[in-house]
Length: 240
Image (cartoon, rainbow, N blue to C red):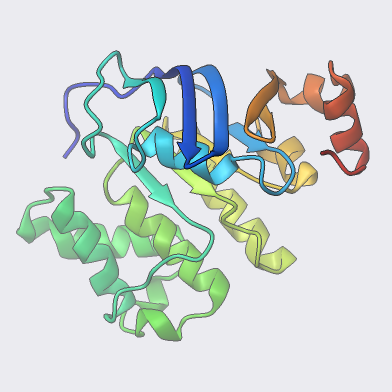
């Protein structure tokens, strides 16, 4: 199911993204390699979601180059992306996973076993037959994670996946994310929750108004921010 080529490092070289006269991302150069989760943080409107879409290949830069393992092809590769509100197919939880496995090239005879393994891994084994759209918000996010992991991605891009979840559901999703990271999947995750950054992140990319202001190890960013804007963000002040 895994391709032989690697999508890492993921690199952006002098990348900008514009829409009409609006600059969404401004001349960003960034290299993301294997290892602990990379978190993308910043105030609302800073360009976090657009950056993830570029990293996935869903958007093309207005200038600059995005490469995956040195390649410029933006095909599906070994990447998966999960948004804050995942789309659930009008099928059972199990059928949602089987759909992902089919797209990943899993042989038909192995899909039932793999489906159950993935459901069990996210704590949904007993809900395999339930319609996905009847699951709770936290259960849907866990199902979406399992469906994304069915592709065995090398890079998993997550756009604030716990933003609308309660603390118990958030903890469950975080445990799944950490397990994926420990298994070798590179997590690149947007978040507004600095507590979550401290719990999960290896390094931090800090955006303000579409510009890359700071990149640092998570502990350094949280405890010893190098720029006034990062210091203000960590304190909880408004950053413009």
